[in-house]
Image 1 (cartoon, rainbow, N blue to C red):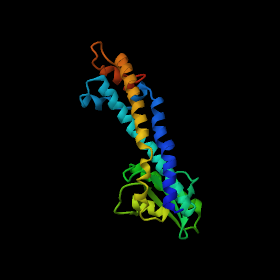
Image 2: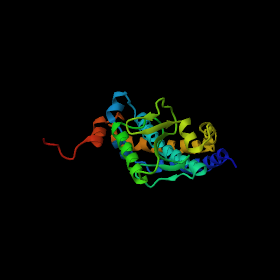
Image 3: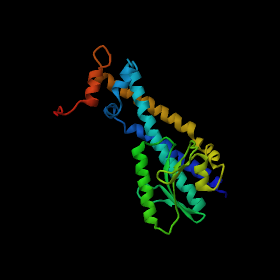
Image 4: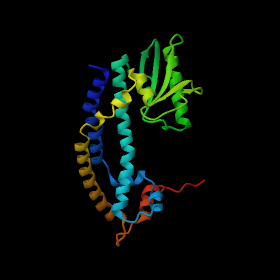
Length: 247
């Protein structure tokens, strides 16, 4: 069986439990107060959100969007490690901040995997560079180590990063590096839709139930008697200090 076929089988087997099912299960763990505390109330007020159902829906969608990015990013990282295991005996690294390591053409590659190219600020990039330097020290002076920031999608027209001495390989370049297959980046898109319709129906049903319950709770706890939103109470929950800071 070819690497591409093995990859497709892996995706079809893992996409439901590692993404869809966890996405649905995450709804059961949500609490209204926790969502309100994590999101910026000033933003929603500035957007002129005036009804409880609308505000609750926007809060839920904003929360779930960031959570889905995290879940899917973890799935992609696991898939990349699995693919590289087929192709080059790659494995999950034990070095802090390094996700994948493997040997190809006599060179040891250490890879920090990110979902897309615009993933971090200057401090986070500096931390990644420190992790690459640590990996080089662990490998020893006699080993040719190539450090790679691998991004699962996107492009970077300047892959050779002088500051930090690493490669930033995105999209097709990343998937080809870890698999040896130039068109793997296209082949993995189709099996990602496996069971998507059925799982999405289940998610929408669970989301609707949660939206109804949260709207009732929100109306009871964060609305005035005329059903208008009590923004001051929301801001107090979100931002009130336990004690005023005295400089």
